[in-house]
Image 1 (cartoon, helix red, strand yellow):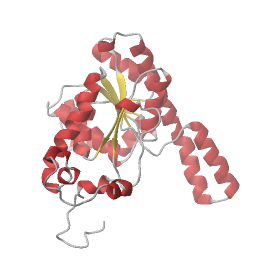
Image 2 (cartoon, one colour):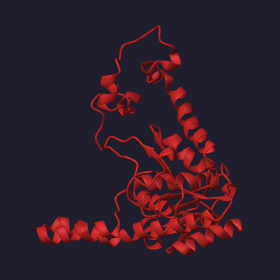
Image 3 (spheres, helix red, strand yellow):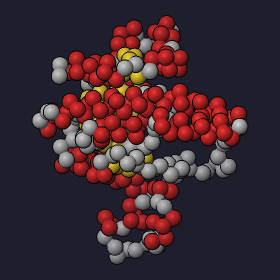
Image 4 (cartoon, helix red, strand yellow):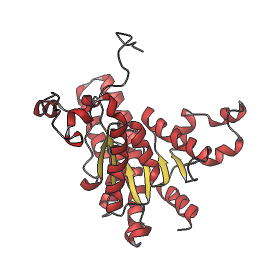
Length: 287
């Protein structure tokens, strides 16, 4: 782990870091005392106005979703690095032709994990097909982090079912665009992870966590903690891909060591089939 080069350096970058070079070029970063405060971009991006920006990131997606009737979501998490079967097969063919041993291993792994992409896509299609037949106030909408991989798969499945889908994207040092299956008017971008995670939970009626990395773990355990501590109402929490999750985290150790109670293991369930996952959610709400 690399330490900061200078102790006084701030760990969190200023909001300016999220602007593209073009944004910065188009704005003169010079103070303008005469400009109205709420129309002064330079002022709003100061470190001291962080609280205002947090409030805006809370309000903008909330009001936009209210206006479009999005009140109930099923949140799907998972790796941004998985691709669909067609793309994985092409990668494998290219790796075999190249003779690059490392590329071959990576391509074989992509083929293996592509099944999760297709399963997430199938699950979301089930949700969309159900919601299409319900009145607007009873519909469930797929919500993801808006990026590639499992997020794309979930948005894609719902989109193919003719449903609107929500994407809560995040600005990152490496460019990440919203996947093409997010409904444009429901494609939001965040600077703050904390506000983004709050929005995941605000409308969530269920969480389906597919295999993923640090980001997936962060979001998963955030929601488990909120439910465990009763800061949020209980919702179905499904760990999709039981082999992956049980190899990754031995939850029984937490019980054995007394850091959680045995009852806490009932907060989530392991499933491996899209229909089973959807049935579990329907059973929870008697849909």
